[in-house]
View: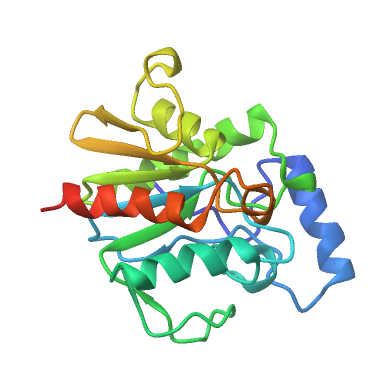
Length: 209
């Protein structure tokens, strides 16, 4: 099973049409399904929502080019899960350590809101990604959509695993950790602070010891 969609994937007509529109407007942007980034032998998988229009859809690397990446990669660097420097572009030399980053939906959706069928259509790639990680122990879901898709990927029922910031759920050999998404909106409104985000990683790191 493929872990990544084809670069010209058109399984979701609405998302493909949105990519076409952005290709016409911004021909220098990536404008394709954004592949996972990091180490497939990692113990940690981070699952986001979808590429940001002016972030990963532009740069071709998850969480790269927008505020969410500033917070996420800054935190990974602080906790030793990344090396080098993050400079918001894919050739900045940043590397991930024992971590892989992906998205529940691999193409940018209008208004950053994928539909239920689009999430379902893309889920086989998340399934394949998890199956391709032999050392995986922890999954971090950034936001409820990532949480719900991961629960379904692992065969769980949503009613049994409620999303809550810094909650942890045991599903078979994996522990699913939840965090509010590290978006500018969540940080600007105070829903997510840097300290709250770092506390999630403290728990994840502790679980590996």
